Image 1: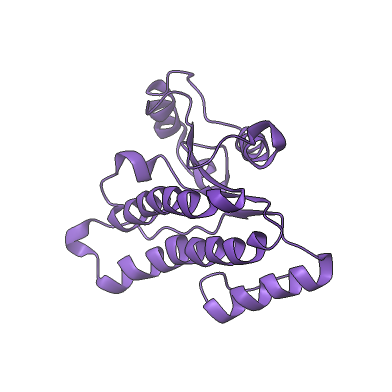
Image 2: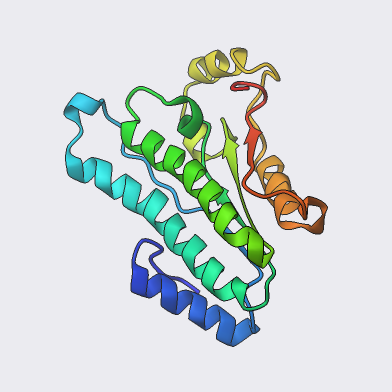
Length: 188
């Protein structure tokens, strides 16, 4: 099902379609994310708002719909994909930092609201991941970043996926409101 996760009516209809098709919504991963990097002095409000709308508002819509839908069965788990930048900030990424930091705080609030219904809300904060975004970096820049990571490498996408799968699984049935760092020790 394809829909714009930042549009409330599309998100609600998307979840409704999933529930009608599959009978329930038991798990959700909020993974929408964009950047629009520039120094704060050069950032227009629309640059800030567009990133926050896509990254944070869409996750809010997902969490709210999950809370509403999963409460009926009193079972479910949500994982929000935040970022190391939401914990430590980064020059030129005021909008992205705010959206991912807000996602961390929002996850904890949803965890408190969902706990009485046996719903779990957690988030992961990946650092540098081997991806199209890091592939465009020069070898010199990649090496500089890797030199600052205690494990001396970027994560494989599967390593992030495995952590998300853990948080969605019964192995994490007593984990809620948590932030799982996946950054090779870059930020502890």
